[in-house]
Length: 262
Image 1 (tube, helix red, strand yellow):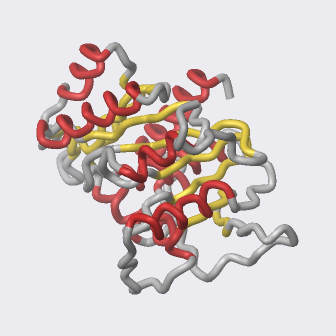
Image 2 (cartoon, one colour):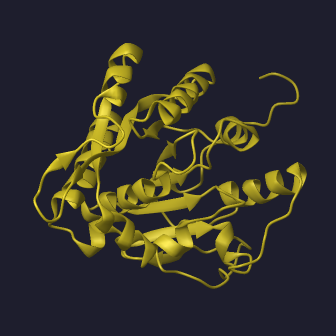
């Protein structure tokens, strides 16, 4: 190990750790991460999700949770749970409307606490919802945590896909297994006439997966109900478990389980 680099270690009591990344903001990564963790739980796994976005935490809203976590007898943070999934987020530790105006050192200290000072109580799989970008937070996580794989989310739009490819290359450079990509918001189905429209294109992510030699894990439609479910704190896998939209998330979970033998 090179001098000065933090020691990479497993998260205690967690069998598999999967990161969900996008490199680009606004592509629906957190919604996908939340539904993925819920799909794992639906498939009988002990599932959790860790919100590593210090400045813009989304998990409290997505899971309709609030309040400061209690501490265990070992002075570890105890996760908040809903819909059968354990969660942890910086959003629980600060006020809902409070800005987090921190410099790098404080951010890294908070991230360290979230990564290694939470008492998960035994999980089969933990989903890490990464913030956008390929900077300090992503590098810190790859240096401090043994990641079993990462799924990279992108819309078919070229401006998002370019950043997603940078994300894929970053994870490969730091030797994190890239499980594949998730194409989000590809097909809009009109709720009135059922006509399909590819607003951002349809095949861009699939084509890039072929070029990069990685799988396309899922193709998630552009559907207002997915957004509505997320905003009211009841993600699609819970709100509409028998819908085509929920089946897309279940298929994503199944693909990842096969890749990791979970």
